[in-house]
Image 1 (cartoon, rainbow, N blue to C red):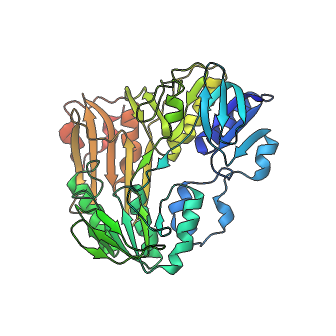
Image 2 (image 1 turned 30 degrees about the vertical axis):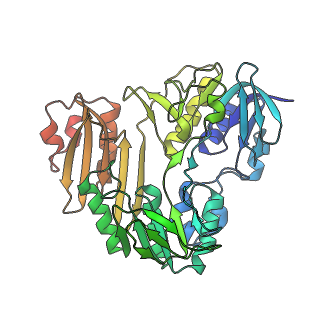
Image 3 (image 1 turned 90 degrees about the vertical axis):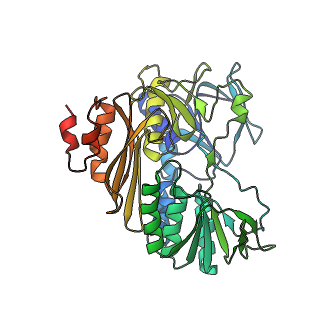
Length: 410
């Protein structure tokens, strides 16, 4: 039975950043990373970017670590296997290979998994985008397709519509909701995105769902629930993510939508931490439990968890953000931008002019924002959130696009 001081489940940016940080803090400790992918660390962000997708840059640019890096840092990478069971009392993890590894400290950086479509589908032609193998399969299929469907109203669908149009495919977008990114975005925001998509040649079907996929071995079209028949040779299903937590729940680890953790990224189990997309942690800035799925948050989680695994007790503190570009527009989310019932949503800018944001406020405090073509304000809003700026009574100013937000930051 193998034994290590620091065991990390997850070879993505959270887990690898944690391992690198641990090595800097503890030069002689044994460190192992278990990754369910057969690859070393690569840029997940790049998978849906034009230069990579259209193969305009060398494939090697996807890698963020060399194969030799792990040996040089004396970090063991156990790839292509999953963690199937945890015994927190005995401090060991059982892998899908049958190997059992004991640990002193454990980090759960398990990430997210794509939700699998529950329709009967052909053997080939339906794709998801989360991993490098997913991206490779989509890229390989593009030359053999003329029409594609993209399903879903989030980041993946937006970016994939952009990539597929750049590859000169006819693209149809299937939205279950009345407008893009509902209910996270309001109708005005959603319509800006839709106008950009349609201007870029994407045909949008709103309030629509696929009833069946045609074809036996290969996708040969789809029929919507209203009977509309669409020709396509490939379908990208961007229908959300879930966290692989059943094996942890069975071990007594507290989970909700993600793995529950406090502000130090500690779980309810001794010597077990959580980081990255799967961590549902206590945000000390917003004073709430939150789960975030973006690269920056995962990277900084990995660093913070590593410090606390070595004996420090520093709360994680970061205003998270994510941006994407396509079809001539830029979309940004900062902080916790969910328009929950107890929050006030303050519009800023002009939806008609295509420069529109929404600032999310609760109890006189800015919690987050959504910004379309207003990313110049992202840094200012981040500072307002970080500094807990009191905006009570300043709602009219926040909604005035000509008002300089700098004046609110002391």
